Length: 119
Image (cartoon, rainbow, N blue to C red):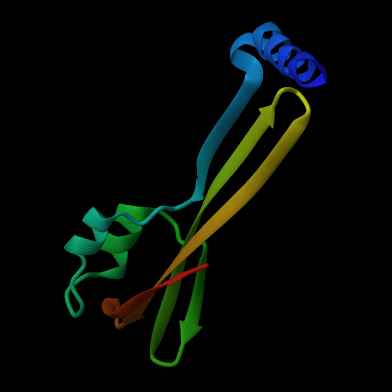
């Protein structure tokens, strides 16, 4: 008898909450300059100029003089927030940040090398 009362109570709670028994929401946004694979496919070491890159990507996050050249840095972050709950009892949320940074090294205004770092 006790077991059936517990089962009935759980069934009643589920029925009363309807579709709100379990909920999981996710939202993502990107900040900064995302360097697309299409842009990367158009970049050629020894040919791509600094002015072309800036016109394609915009002003870099930073520009540093290096020996015989200049280093441009573009960073983007993808932030994903998740929120979920179960029967209004268990509530959880999380945030995940994926960071991507591209470095472009120029000598005499022409690209000499580039690389990507991910965190």
